[in-house]
Image 1 (cartoon, rainbow, N blue to C red):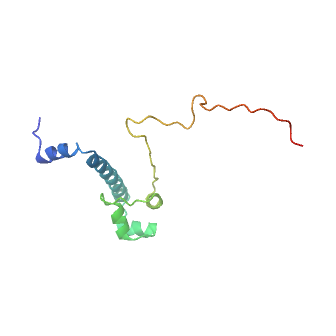
Image 2: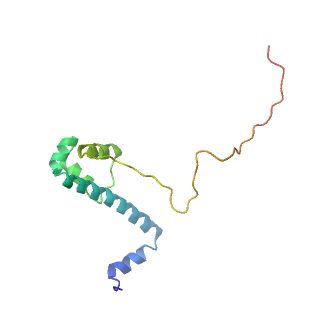
Image 3: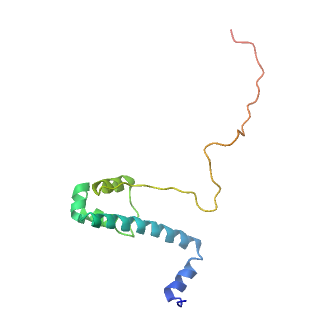
Length: 123
């Protein structure tokens, strides 16, 4: 087994902080988007300048989208970029671990209708 590096020890210590863990996960998500966009663009052989032209934006905006530190991705922009690259955008939203699942409908109704006294019909 390899000895732990200073970074491994540092990361291990930081992961004890819940706030750090949340920021670390979000950074990983942004990294995934950036890598996927850049990789797809490179596979299609399109430069950032050409992609920007196809999307109707600036080359700087494409660079931002491909930056792991950028978190301002809009769904509409991602769709435009994906379309220009011959791809689709798929978003997954999942419950957090340890949370009780929420259902839109219940197995049986928990609501009861109170019976109303019948009155004579109005004239």
